[in-house]
Length: 97
Ligand SMILES: [Ca+2]
Ligand SMILES: [Ca+2]
Image (cartoon, rainbow, N blue to C red):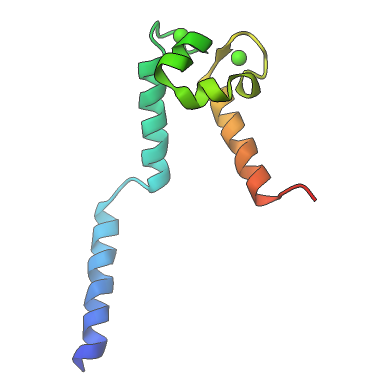
């Protein structure tokens, strides 16, 4: 087999092996980082980020606090964050006409 065909094939094989060994997707890693960040920022561990907790440990939540806190109870849960992230992703996919 000519080398110019073999070399790309070997590269593909190596990429295949590397991604097979990698069990987490980029999305998993992103979710993991957000989880870790949330846990660190949630100083009292009650599952809510209050405004001061967000300001201190999770600036992104702090910036969007009022949008995320849909039930307006003064704390942002991970579910509220996920809801916010989903809405933003959907808005990007289908921009308003
Ligand atoms: Ca808290
Ligand atoms: Ca809330």
